[in-house]
Length: 241
Image (cartoon, rainbow, N blue to C red):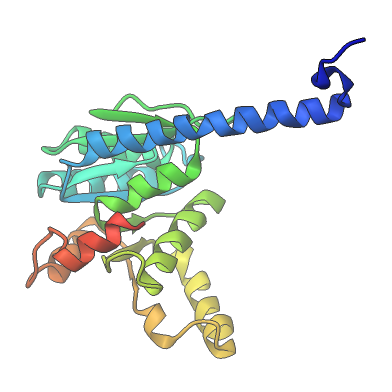
């Protein structure tokens, strides 16, 4: 008689136990992503996180615009952080790489599209979007958002939610490209604000600009009377992201 209880279990239950075991062990992979990110990025401040589409070609005006923005901010002393991939991300890293400050790429493993660009002084690789998102926010002095798709909208909504709810410190959130973003901002006002799902003050969390000088000016004006370093209260918020 076989006393092995496992052999009496249905194969579906055995598979579920195996999946649970694999999921439990993934905790250590997630911890490793956070630890490496904290250790390698804790010294990059002040930094600016730049977002935009991976599908923008090298010859597109948005690519050159992004490169110029990143170069200007890099020369002004800001570490530039991007998603590390092609398109706008590459342009951001390239501009920073050619500037005076470090270029950081937070790469993500994806079935398609994502492949690391070659303009990264610091390169990290993530399997999980949520741990990568923390790294974008935790050390950023500003967010610069260029035209993009769902991923870009996701990052924009993430920082707006964190600031709106007080889970992160308030920083400049700068949308670049009036022609691209104006329709979305009008919809925020005509639909979300009019319905009462956001407040008028929430719209003030964002600025809309069109050129590198305006981006730099918006950041420096915000920090004119305060330090780039988070206050004690803000540091506590960042610890609880």
